[in-house]
Image 1 (cartoon, rainbow, N blue to C red):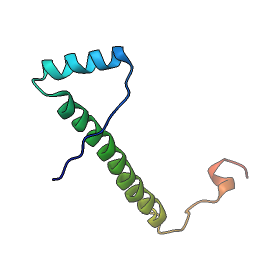
Image 2: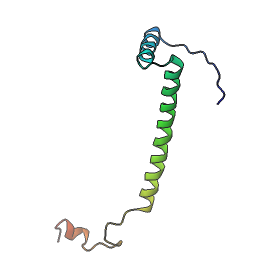
Image 3: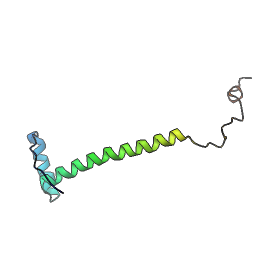
Image 4: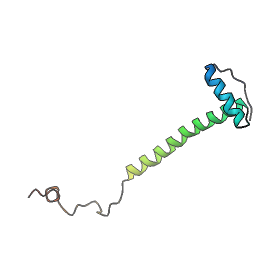
Length: 81
């Protein structure tokens, strides 16, 4: 995969913490940032896929065993005779 260098402007305390985290994981700062970006981007994509899947389920509806008919009226259900 082709790569391209970028310039980032980060607060110094954040940069310092990122360098320490990268060193603790035996990674370069570039590798740490790339992994963080990939995770963030993939997380958003996974959310969208899950959202679409669940919206389709809601559109289709659920079989609650009533076959679309209620055995009792609303009044009977709430004791309003």
